[in-house]
Length: 309
Image (tube, rainbow, N blue to C red; front, side):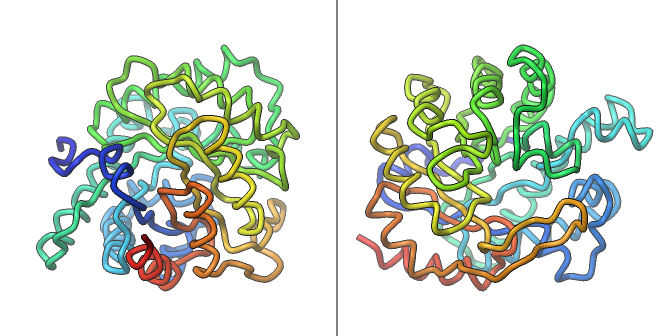
């Protein structure tokens, strides 16, 4: 399927804030699907594609403008471990974009008149390892090795015609540099979002340095953070806006912590749509939720943003 004919996402960001969706995994789990598999939600691209469409549609119905695809943990290497060859893996990667496009079509049939976009999720190397290492970074790979890992997937996803590539949950500057190099020449814009802890990346680099990597990269139309605690967002947004001058993306998780050994979330939620006003004042233009933020949370964000000057 081709890219949408709506105004480009970059054009929309110049006009005002845009609502992202929420966590794909929690929405699928709430519908009764077991995601304990190492492929996580990417398994359903093959096993239950209709479930993926319905999850996207739930967020559009809640007020999201952007669907982030179910490809976060979808990689050639991960599928190969399940006996799926490169051709089959490529088809599944393309399907992640097509399923989101189908959700756009259904949202239109249901009466949604606002522009809707599809962001192809590109998760970090650590997501493929399925051991929580995306929250640590520093995998022991060089920037060149990480670029060789990411580039083939980026090429396939770009060819599927998303509106934007979501380079998300990036834990360190090495992987960010590899991804920024990897999107060059693909003809599809991207956003780059780190997962952070306090005022640093998960690997410990200052956010000024991390965001600065993308400041002069034309392909990157927005920078920011995702899958971090809500309380870490405002400083990151202020820093990203100041360092890069680009629109900022912010979609934190609920505030709970991921226990990789138990494969479960721990703690309590600190996410509130009331925080969105301060994020927008600091420079956020793409705002939504990540893990454990569902349609109800996105509906609250949409209500805040559509009344935001």
